[in-house]
Length: 221
Image (cartoon, rainbow, N blue to C red; front, side, top):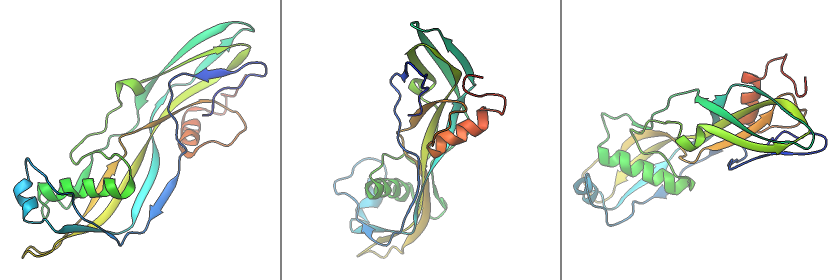
């Protein structure tokens, strides 16, 4: 985490989860069979595709800046402790989709997201879900001891996942169906930075700095 680092003390972010930002691509080609024993809506269609499997094209993963705070100048005198709260606002809207919807059943869409979740190991938003900034991510709280002076910015990132697929139903007369899953990991990641520090930043944090920290906003300035 890119936490502010004063010369004689440190400012520690509290309850902030971070993961390194990256862009990744995985070549598909292997098949994923659906788990057995489904029930509920779409179960009948699944029983007609008990030997169904998914073949994936290129699976794209990309981390994006999803929410950011306004810059806040913080001054803490030597030996003093201060609690600081930054409020974040969303930068984008997202909806998880499986397309083209006209050719795919609801069962196909549900199974596609579940198969991609197994393939990537990520918890993924189900089709039709709209992304929102969760209550726990709307604020970033820190507490630090001085001396410290700098301009702080909080950010939240989300990992987008997109992958084309073919679903086949072996042993049935149903032809293969094809589409694309566009969704995101339901576990966001957050960071806290001081504007103007000369150090490497994760990609999403660097986006936040470029967006919020202007030329006139520098650490200690």
